[in-house]
Length: 143
Image (cartoon, rainbow, N blue to C red; front, side):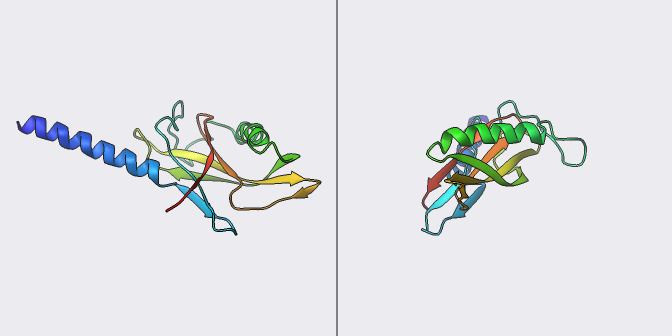
């Protein structure tokens, strides 16, 4: 009986943990129009990603490879624009929702779509790339 209760409690806890991770973005921004955009961890977000500790070695996914992945994705996702430029890059630790032990780092790209030679800057133009080369697409959300 105690064993069954512990298993049930563990399953409920795991579901609540996963639910909270899927509902809250690990990175978000609000545009001038008040629309919120965020990057969310999904069940398969870190598939193929190696755990990595900053400062111990170079990242498993080199920055130049991450840039190419982000640019290829952005040119398709934002196809209504002439092109999409990378305006900044950061590398962020995502640990609260990581599905297995270890630290998972994500490249976060701020993007600037280009139309008629002019760059458009806005908080909602972003994308994440995991160390396993997976894309984390921005999603609009409400509180």
